[in-house]
Each structure stands twice: as C-alpha cells, then as structure tokens.
Length: 65
Image (cartoon, rainbow, N blue to C red; front, side, top):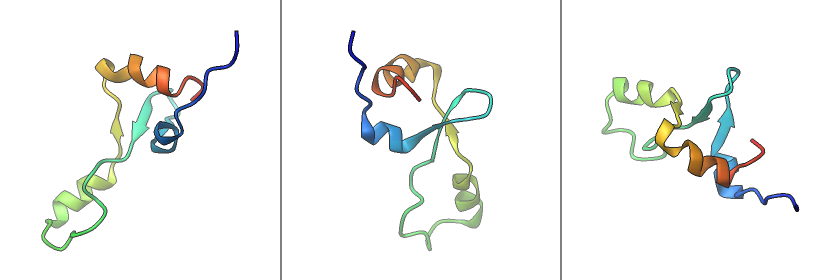
C-alpha cells in the first residue's frame, strides 16, 4: 500500500509534545492587539491541545506526525 500524503497546512500548524499529545497555537494573536488586555494576550501565548473529538480527523490529515 502506498504512503499516505500529509496535509501540509495541518502539518505546519501542529506539533507533538514530549508526552505525545498534539499541540497548536491559539487564535487571535496576529494583529489589532492594542485593544486586548495584557491578561488575554498572556494567555494566548500558551498553546492549546487537540481535543479527543478531533483526534481521528487529525490522524488522517497528518498520519506521520
């Protein structure tokens, strides 16, 4: 069976943590940050984790990550 192709857009947005979980950056941290509170910006620095409901779909998009 041939290799599965990786969805390049998903591969650039996801990375695997040391414990094997899939991590992603949070949204809304690109521009127009002046109206956002410091607390909000600080919490956006922390990455998010892929939910259990999305894991099957992500596994199809990025099979070798």
